[in-house]
Length: 239
Image 1 (cartoon, one colour):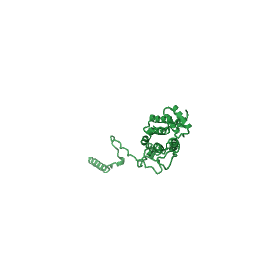
Image 2: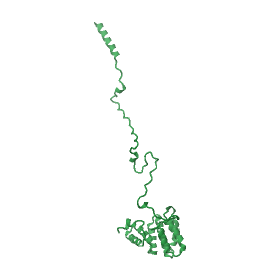
Image 3: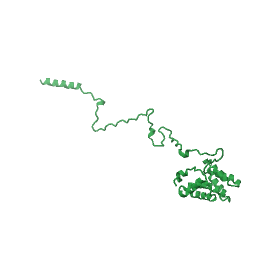
Image 4: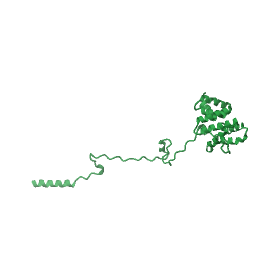
């Protein structure tokens, strides 16, 4: 009886060994409770399809587009009055505007008052050095050297033209307001009917004494000077 029981026990153990469970597959493996969870794999944004929104649209204004050469876009074209083309002389060195302050019309009217024609060429040369629309060929120091002695000429027509031109030299030399106003004031004292000198003075006074500036502005308008700087609209229209 005891021998039969032992034999039965041995047979059951052998059968259990034959049926040992297979190791778990990787998909069924369970991580230990104290191990960290694996980090999620990063995903890449898809490339924009043709016709999609340009990513450069979200960049700050003025930033070069993504993928561009790095060059900033050209500045926008000027708009408004500054974009208008000034009617000017053609085919001459240092051309002048046709009308208004600092124009060929002003130069001719002033030279017509000077009887000593030998001074015309010198005065015209200096005037063109200061007022030419070709800014690259302006020569304020050269004009000042020419005009400084002529500002003391006994002929008021010569001296007033020299002083009026020297006024703009002062403006162009570090925006010397007081120096410019002193030159314009003397030009007006020498010739009270010098309309462009009144207009220039009105321009300078617009930044300080508009009451007195309007006196000069109204005088310039009465003398037929074109308001080519728009002083009425900007400064003197409501006074």
